[in-house]
Image (cartoon, rainbow, N blue to C red; front, side):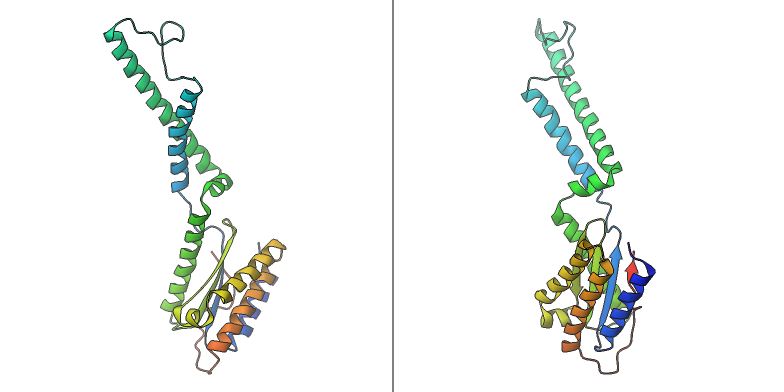
Length: 227
């Protein structure tokens, strides 16, 4: 997605921004944040419940087995009981087959799986992945004023998260502006320019609220992290 020149331009932007602040900026490009294993299972259950019910509603009964060529006929209580058991067994087997078929199809087709995954779930996973990067930065020694610009390629989502110290001062509008910049760059086919613009935006807020004192210890590489 990004060339070496793109990486260099992003790193240069981060270096310029951090020269004006004691804060830190981390740019991350994730190719996929989750496997969404629950998606095939959920759609398998939906298929197993809905498809046989719709078939029955339209008069189709593929699970019924009859020796008389298709009509379900009972001549006495014993044969009725056996027919019911046969019908229920056939219905259950059909549900199992549909469940397995849907799970396999959705699992093997990654674009389909992502399309069937609710947007809200993808957004939660992307934000969780970004928050994990933020926590990792703090574990490396950064104290406050940390901003993570996070783009998820497979999910086609971007989020910006910051620690409480800078978030309380800058607010959501600052990060929404940075997100819009990254998305605009990606949609125009120039993801690097989007990251650079977002870094400039975040760097401005950091410089305003955490200006450089000369005591900052650079705990991170300035380059884009691809994971």
